[in-house]
Image (cartoon, rainbow, N blue to C red; front, side, top):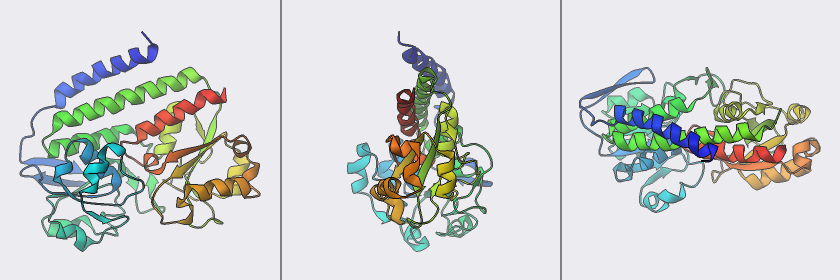
Length: 335
């Protein structure tokens, strides 16, 4: 048996025990501690609004698409398997929806990816504003372990972990009384995560470094790159890759002179359909790397070691695993 297959089956067997422990019917009323607040459900929600692509795709993956009455905050096209489903659901906004547009959908639950949308200083609204009109809010635990008052996208207090992602899946499944679907999804993702990590170990690519470029407010200013504790930092740590950026901010700005001096072996650039900033366009990123007098001198640019990766996979989401697999596939090429 191939070693990876053996590892995958072992992981699956272990997770099957977890499945059995969690795949029970939900008992209502259900109370859950979420980002410092306790939310209670008397029954499974029938109408969901998602503020954040990650929350949307988790709901879809749990088979809850028929409950979703509105979505918002899109970085990339929806996963292909949900394209038909998603086309029939009202998109409240490509980016930030208004408080009124969310409330108008009369949701039983608002599932939120980021506190900066709905949180203490939420630009859509505070949790209290929604709770005051009888609408519960659930923030993905992936965003609860950050100081969202510091830095543009917040500062990580600890390394991102898929444990928080799996908790989000498990809790949303429990809220909606689809625990078996939640455990099945977690098992699949965890198995693939374990296989990708093993593949990187087998690659034995020593002292490989990387930088992840998400976007830039303007093409001629310092880019938003991945800090050491966000999803890209987690990917690099899992695969034994060194992040040349050491900030705890989720997406700090770092000058190209500093990045060029670090001379990363791989440059990962984000591809997205969002068009909030000029560098959201991946073609503009690639053109910049090839023509900027500082950036074009990096070894990764000269050698063509530029990896185009889905932007949403660089933020907490079920896509983190496909991104981990993609980066693991690159490492054998560097030996």
